[in-house]
Image 1: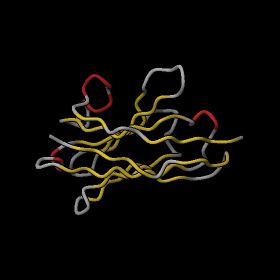
Image 2: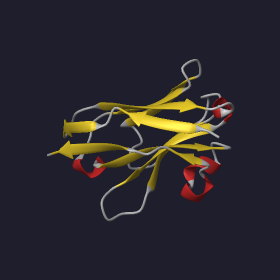
Image 3: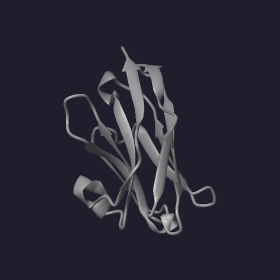
Length: 124
């Protein structure tokens, strides 16, 4: 079993920055690829970014590529999502996710564990 706890959400003006954190716990949490999804009101949960177990491989959704950066700290067992140049359309609940592989982690149905989410609101 893997537990994921997100933090760092909040209210930010458009153009600003925010960093989300996801603390993972559980005996095998370090063996999972980690990622972020988001869900805006009235929309389906969508892929944002993922990072491999080693941190060497990352994938991003086209809508966030160049603005968001995913990273992980193996010692702290924590994954981060650095979000820059935020737009109103980035407003959503952001969910941390764990999957058996970084390739599988881009698809919602392949996620093995979810966090409870953290709200990110961008004001224009």
